[in-house]
Length: 347
Image (tube, helix red, strand yellow):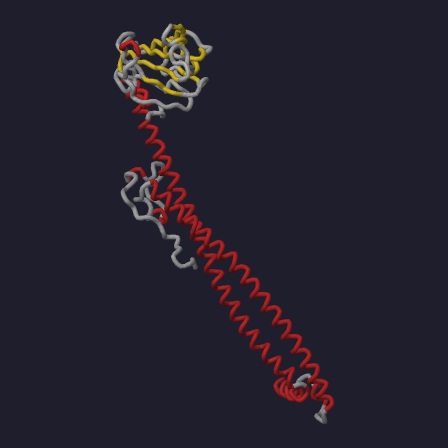
């Protein structure tokens, strides 16, 4: 009963299995419900699309059912009205027939005899009715035909409505089954992702702070920013750039990129600066700050330790000059690799 091109079975084909058959039902007998059998081999994404397609099919069919309910109610009303009209015409015709019958020279006593053959009485009344009002009798016969047609249409509407009701019930059952299966594989996928993340955390804990790409826990600029790989760019006095410049609006918070101990000092070139001694023995330096954070001494990654500014020789160009010294102060490395991993402003 769906529109052309719409079917509850419309769904993408399976591209690859999403789970091992042994994981189908850890709490039960491992067998999917019959309606689930066609989606057991689908990927999670394809299963979601299948469920979505069934939801659409159900909504379409329910709309059809609502429309058909209205048609069925209209058909029932039409039959009732025709029955009433037919009854009224029949009653009027009989009354006219009796009146006309009494006015003829036919024995009126025939109407009063209780054991009179009904066929004889009907024929007599019919003849009298025809004589009395041929037009009314023709109208009565037309109404009978209309009533028969309306009753036939009503039966067809009832059949169609029952089919739609069965289709809605089947789609609801199918959707419930598919949603149940989807919830099950989504839960398994969540557990899988948790295991993956746990493995990542374990790996991160082993390598954090020990090699390039793992020196930082979070981006030192907690706001919109941008930066390029400017390592080695020439600077005044024959110097070379030994850090990365994260450009941001004045006042954007600067946070500790790792756990450690922070100290604040100012110098002639950079102005307000922070010195962060990381938990793994690495040293981090940031300068050109417009102000310091409230925390001093021990600090956790993500805590505010300052604000972007243009102090020192950076007048008019607010940014954070940030350095990484692997293994301790004095062993500077290009911080671009690590910063680009934890920050989203790389250009």
